[in-house]
Length: 119
Image 1 (cartoon, rainbow, N blue to C red):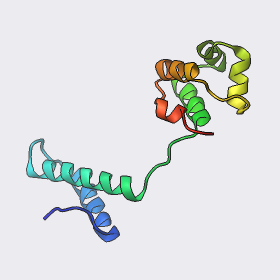
Image 2: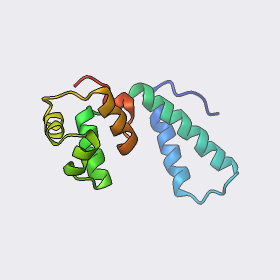
Image 3: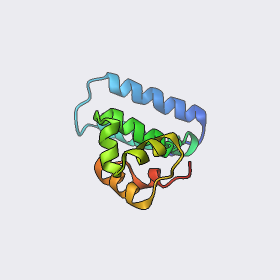
């Protein structure tokens, strides 16, 4: 019977079962497909509680997103409004202001909760 994960051993067991299910040719809407979905939800919840992933630093998030989207630092200057601000921001000398956070959120789709963190 499937239930909430209460120990690391149970977590490892569920991971092994998920692996086995993913290696088999399961059909949609089958009992195995339902089991895989339920186990995945339980494992995700356990990992969120026991292995939380820290939020990235705002500057790291900006750099990552620029690279991911293929946007140059020159284009970032256009988003922020001033060329000098871009270098000051990326070097950590200047903090993001509210209008910059809004533009970065809108143009680069970086969550505002990442951009408003202290750094």
